[in-house]
Each structure stands twice: as structure tokens, then as C-alpha cells.
Length: 242
Figure 1 (tube, one colour):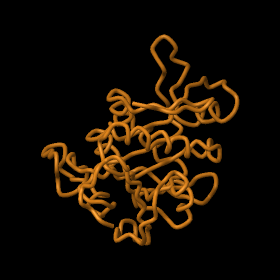
Figure 2: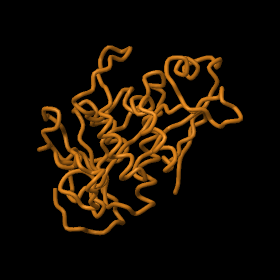
Figure 3: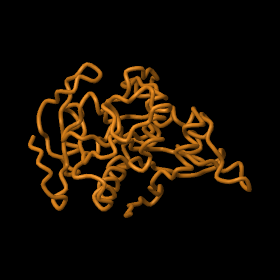
Figure 4: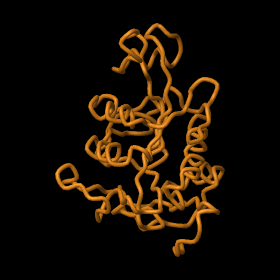
């Protein structure tokens, strides 16, 4: 697995321990979506950010499903600091509850400042079924359900790319996305990455290699989305046409 890193904040995959920890610590899961998202977040979101432009609150059951069933498709941007640290990191730690790095240094906190959350689908584009999740997944788990993550799918559906507002406009979203695209391509887990976004974010994804397909049929959150896809040239032809 190849990763990129910035001078300040290393990028890592979610390990099984990490993403299970965030599911258990509901505050951490809330923070996964407590930022400026470039993707549609659950309709139940309702937290006001300092910018006054975005209102989100994490749909915890949906996040838990995605992190537990396909955490290997998710990535996080992490750092660590003490509450006394100056700047955005220290300010963030003072406002929220974060787990300690280890038991020997309980004052130093692990901070997640950005994330990508994805699933796989058996369609070339993001659909309403791909955005959904099976409500009985804990008692009736299936590898290829009608909705949600499809283990046999060749399309990685990128549902959420988010950076904490305290660290916005520093290029971290681009770094996180570039690293993620490279990791998914190198791993061979899919033939493409697909997403839906608003018109204003099209240039951002085009710079990362995504192609605009056109208006999406997905009606999640009221619709009016744009389909975008990044096909991996060396993944072979799996018969899909856009």
C-alpha cells in the first residue's frame, strides 16, 4: 500500500482497531462528519459550522455500517498533540473528546482531522441503493446485499471526503484524495472510483483525474447531483458503458 504524507499530518489507512474504536466512541464518529464535506452527507445532519454554510450531523448507524463492513476502503488523516499545543490542533483538542495515543502518555491525544469513507457497488455509477445500507446487517449480514456495500462490486463509491474546518483550505483534502486514489488503484480492489457531487466541486475532482459523466439519477438528499468517475486504465474492460 502506498501512501502520501504532508509535512505536518501523516495519512494512514484505518486499521481494524482504529475504526472499531471510532464506532465505540460515538463522539469520534460524529467528528468524522464534523467538517466541510465535498460529498452528500446523511439527511439527518444538523450541526452548524463556524463558516455558517454547512449543517451536518453524523448518521451514526450508517457510518458504523460502512466502517465495520468495509473499513479497508476508508482512510483517515491523523495527527497527535497535547491540549496545551498552540494553533488549530490544540484548539480542536480542547473542544472535543479524543482517545489518547497510549496508556503511557494519556495527555497526548490522537486527532482525526480528515477522512474518506467508501463502499463498493456492482454498478458503474453511484446509485441510491449504493448510498443506502441494510438495516438488519448486524443480524443478517450478506456479502452482496441489494443495498449498501457489495463485496463483489468493481466500483468504489466514495461517499464522504471531509476535512475538519479548523484545517480547511490548506490543501489537505487534495492530499488525502490523491493518496486514496493511488492506494485503491495499487490494491486492485476495484476498476474505478465513482462519486456524486455538486456543480461547484467539479473542478476539484477533475484536477484529481475524475471525469464528469453528467447529471446523476441518484435522488439521495433531493437529487441534483453530478456523476463523476475515475477509471483505472490498467484494470481491464468489465463491460460497463456510461
